[in-house]
Image (cartoon, rainbow, N blue to C red; front, side):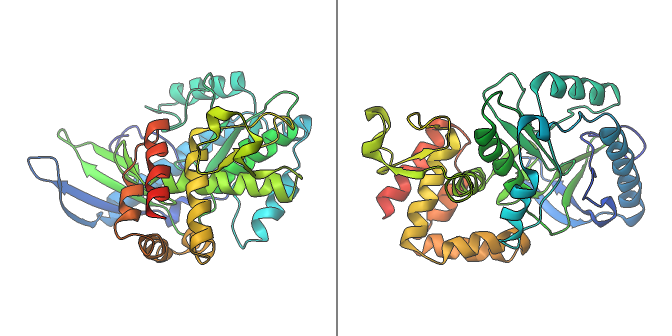
Length: 326
């Protein structure tokens, strides 16, 4: 990320995203690095940054890998219909393979991006994809021979992160030397301060819930299964295990599954939580409804969950906190 006169990374504005609606907030810090005050960014500088964002969007789109959803057996119309039925917007998605994503990363780096995909994990990892808020597009990795699993866990999960219709808000911080450090201010339930993030437990859990609901209701998968149906080493996960259709017998477990089970248990205890979670995708005020609903189970529980790191241990601790609260 950089100054209005130089290089900007990561880019923003691929299809379905309008750079001219981006809002910037300037922050200043005290000597200890804490945010001292916030104010709107100077309109002239803001417009310069939007112009750079549009340019990076054009470059990103021109060198993006081809969507291979048809080859992979993915029904994107079916996926879009699932979200539209909930009143949620759907961002573009590229279903591709890991080598193509590596080449895309390299091309974007050559074009001047200091970190082409921001939080996107390297495609050599076990991650199935990523929603990239800085360019408003979902990247889903094609699992060879597993079209139903790909459609739910890779496509629906990542598109769930992009079901946000409010204008993007970016934070701008003037660094020594006159350069601007920029980052997305919020992605769904996640709030950022540079590379630091808070709120991933609920964001990832909700995306996993959407993938599981899709697998169960649209693809005929199992969704949440009783623990007696799974191996013993998973049987202590709140009495449930998250399953997507690897095969009829093998549960698919991920870090986000701990959060998904926790949200499911909270929704069982507070029936209004499901609707509040969906409202929050379209209305920032809905975040307050989510917080109040979760805190009605135990005061302070929402803040506790929002503070958890995105790790197996962190998300397991969140599930334990929910079980204890209930």
